[in-house]
Image (tube, rainbow, N blue to C red):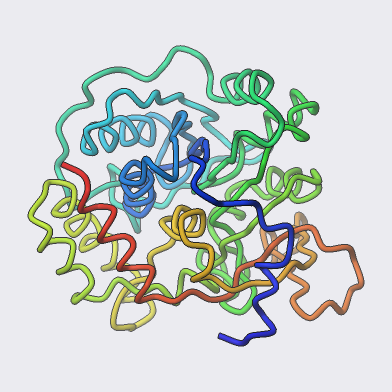
Length: 331
């Protein structure tokens, strides 16, 4: 990691001392989303998971909502409320990824039926009400899927933008380009209009792109470490990732599949293992071949003002050690 690229640590880095950080996880589980939820729930001293809000993405909304409920049960945390959010993008037709995640979104593991239903309130309204009721800078939003819910909340209630401490979002690509099209990463491509709203909102935004997640490969040796934990959560993580890795292993031919969404939670827990820059990022909305592209001005050639802390690299060994340790704390 180049020393001069440790600019992330200098760009408005929040005080992450011993205080527990309140987070809301916005997600479309997804095997890797599920792992991210588990490590967040395995880190109660650092992170207070206020709630989980589901969104359509990897699979339809009813599936992502059900999966969020099941994963919180797996973690022994049925007290964490789950809210169903948006069932489709802001302006486009839904796009899903069963070809990667299977029909349930968490193929590879057979989790018990959820112990309770989702909350009655719509997820967007929950975000608005919770942010309005909190102190400014109290809540961090961890977004693991398309960012539809957050954008809709901003459009419906513009006053909430000044109350968000930070948004950390697994999205985008520059050096790795795209994974759902040659130029676009899935979470942005599904709802580029929502992404455009958020990157232009002025909220402190950290983007965790494919450029980082493609360096965090779930090799067989690393998956074996989860199995060796001997707990229910560790076995479930290994089984889920063993299924979802098949697509990426065939696609890339690497020694392991990239592990995307847990990078968001790991960044909150150990920001020092990541490297990035504060740069300008814009969203392509109308390109013939480039819709959903994150136009990341890594080299500063546009002179547009920086609006995103854009991560570029991660210490993969430290990342997986953190994941194994936190999953090991669960039932």
